[in-house]
Amino acid sequence: MTTPRKTTRLRGLLGSGSLEFLLEAHNAVSARIAEEAGFPGVWASGLTLAAALGVRDNNEATWTQVLEQVEFMTDATGVPILLDGDTGHGDFNTLRRFVTKCEQRGVAGLCIEDKLFPKTNSFLRGEQQPLADAEEFCGKIKAALDARRDDDFVLIARTEALIAGRGLEEALRRAEAYRRAGAHAVIVHSKSPRPDEVFAFLREWAGRLPVVLIPTKYYATPTAAFREHGVAAVIWANHQLRASVRAMQENAARIRREESVAGLEDEIAPLGEIFRLQGDAELQDAERRYRCGGPHGAQAIILAATRGEALGPLTADRPKTLLKIGATTILERLVTTLRQQEVTGITVVAGYKKELVELPGVRRVDNDDYATTGELASLAVALADPAASDGADTLVAFGDILFRGFIATLLLRDPADIVIAVDSRFREDGRAPHASDYVRASRPPSPRDFLDDDVRLEHAEVAEPRDEFHGEWIGLLKLSAAGLGWARDYVVARRAAGDLARLQMTDLLNHFVATGRGVRIHYVQGHWIDVDSLVDLNLAQRF
Image (cartoon, rainbow, N blue to C red; front, side, top):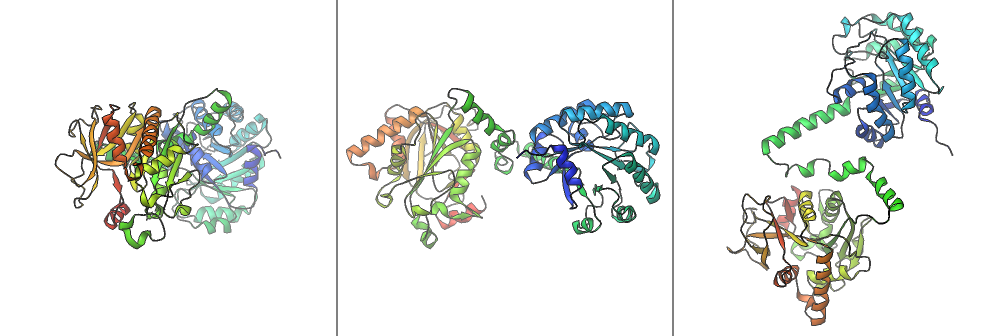
């Protein structure tokens, strides 16, 4: 079945008999977001296109500059785009060429307004803005229609009579003239905070042609009222740009104030979402089809076999990795964080209530001896899995931790074969001293932590905190392809020696140190939490 052209689909929207909605976009990303939100069409706003270019909505951006932006929008979306063409950027002859270029760039329709070129935004001194002669504007409508190659290319005529204070009678007279000239729909624009004058227009208009409204000023009008008055479409004309401006202002002020982005990173769109909107998945697929081989992505192993007895009845029917933080389980949050850092091929080692550990796209392997073995035995199960890749960097994570995504990025970007994250604030977390994975390093933490990457592990131990320790290992380890092989060799040797069951991950780290492999440390200052107790679970709800 052939998909209808975008022009045909836009014509269909205007004539559907149901109220339709178009959302503003000012670049390709915002257009794709509008499409993904479910809008059947996009309004390429003259105001927001100009604002995105840093110029005023006074035709300061040329029509060729506008079309350069809009072409990226049409390429990025599958829904029709209706372009705000202002006055047509000149006389009838300029408009004819403008229409031709719009069609060439995949624009589905054009809206032109009956003001003089160069125009000024309708909400800036609108009553002082002269209107074009109605007869001359009708000539522009006819010229635009004659310039089309696609008979379904939409032309909407917008009258500014109400904006200019000319009243209802003049708005009706002009709209009727534009209908007779061949426009496919009309927009009657208003800056009143109430919809009374546009509803009066609709009553008198009596459905002679589809009417589109832009309720920027009368935004509080119930949607049901638009339906009752037979409105064909409503355009939300500037809201994506305004939302992004507010977010960017707050973001910039916070970064300046805090002189850091560490606390902000997980509150904004992850890089992975930007790559998705850019269509990176299609490129990866194309690389698989057209190139021989290609780069391997990172993979992850999550050790989540234990029950978490310290949490009492909360884990009677589920492992602690499936306890909820808000509406989402610890495991789901951990997997999401990893995926946002472009980690694929995630394997979870399950044990207690293993049948409950099921996530889409996540491989599960089972440590059926979880009750009598330690962390290293769970890792051994994952390393023995035939699906484990030997050619990728691997993050090994405990299944009861939450951490900011930048920590995983720190480890993955480090070229060393074995890298861990260590919290230098372990004495400042507000909790009573407790047994955990503490480390002694080649030097204590300092303000140069993010500049000096030559901090090495000397010893790791599951213990109560002591003065000799420099930090707490957070339970996140990166192994290169070589490091993964060394870990596999170690667990095979310990299984043969008969002591694998009792060993912990700290034993593996100490083995790397003892054999000269070296373990590099990245100090962090908080930005993670592990859930070992009811106190931890309460803290995690606020993390």
